[in-house]
Amino acid sequence: MQDFMLIFHSSPSTDYRPSPEEIQASIKRWQDWIGNIAAQGKFLSTNALNRSGKVVAADGTVTDGPYTELKEIIGGYVLIRADNYDEAVDLSAGCPTFRLGGKVEVREVMKLD
Image 1 (cartoon, rainbow, N blue to C red):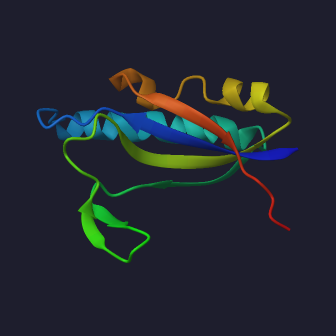
Image 2 (image 1 turned 90 degrees about the vertical axis):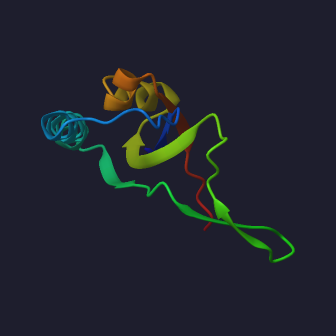
């Protein structure tokens, strides 16, 4: 078994203003999708990412980011365990980010020990 990170990419939208009901429905879709992965014993952890942050350069310069002119944002990730890339890709099926035109990047987590 290998560990994989599913990284959620989407396009920033300043005009998307979901109602409270739409937010609750979205949360439920995420809970159901992650719950399905967990029920298979493949779920490790997850986190959403705040839209604000800092970018640190090699010279120590710190700037605000991510930037509004970006074409994509990373909204969060899920860590899973799968037999191989094909299974990891299969587990991304039904990800709620697809409903808003987003993408899921599947990356193997390298073991450093």
